Length: 343
Image (cartoon, rainbow, N blue to C red; front, side, top):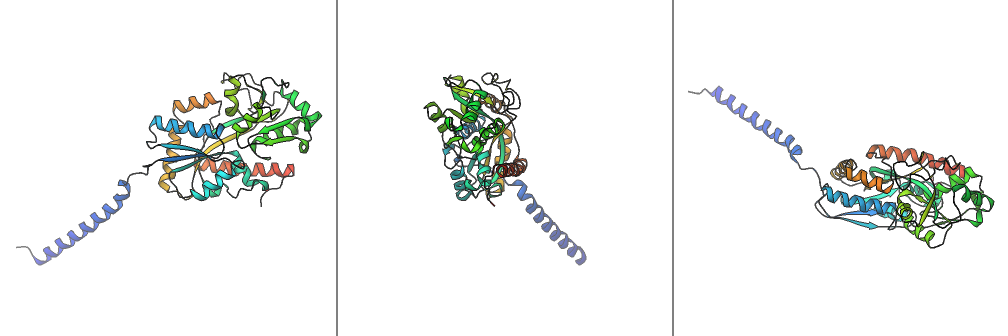
């Protein structure tokens, strides 16, 4: 016969087992939860017009994510130009802050317009979530194929002689990356910077159309925006901002660097992906992991080479730290140029 003491002990053991199993099931539940992945269409927003570097990055990425099956939902690409990326970034940061299915593609002007006072952008790196920096684009100074300017020195000698007689065009407002691309060279050449003529357009595509249409003498842009036109014989690049000739690029390999032309300037325009600041942690992880996988594929590397781009991949934290360091660099530069900055 089972004693009363034994029965009590058995009941206590049973209670302990139930509590323990309940605790285990609760702790195991999160591990069994499926990681977040998109289950409906996604929108990529390029904050510049069609035909430029951001537009190309958005469409190339969408294509490769689909082909590689890293993303199985449809990806739609929209362009939101205006104000040198200000219109698109402000709209995205305010309207898509919690949207796991919205991704923004922006570049250096995003942070520049947050620094300089006339940029009028209230959105900085703390107001949006950097997913990854994925590519760098060297600057170029380009002219029409039949231009009278044959070298970078020819062009800037003419600018120095009379800055008002040479019209530059570019894909951003004064003080943005495209503008600084020529300002840095002009400064080295001893040009009166305040007398230079610069006509801004919304994105590299519009600026290139203006150049080809005879509305400018020279264009400041980047390799990816002009490379196909160089190959087609419509545009001639006078110089590239790389630290050395782009020897691995069949189209750009013979173009002299700014340094080789006599101007000690090197610069690069970064591009990257962002999502809303208040997007879910699952979405932030998904997009970070997915872009990390994509940039390691042979197809991605081939697209970079085809476009003449530089692999400068940085993950979310490193990207954010880079932007913060860049803020200081541009703030110092604007201070030296006497341009007002936002306080």
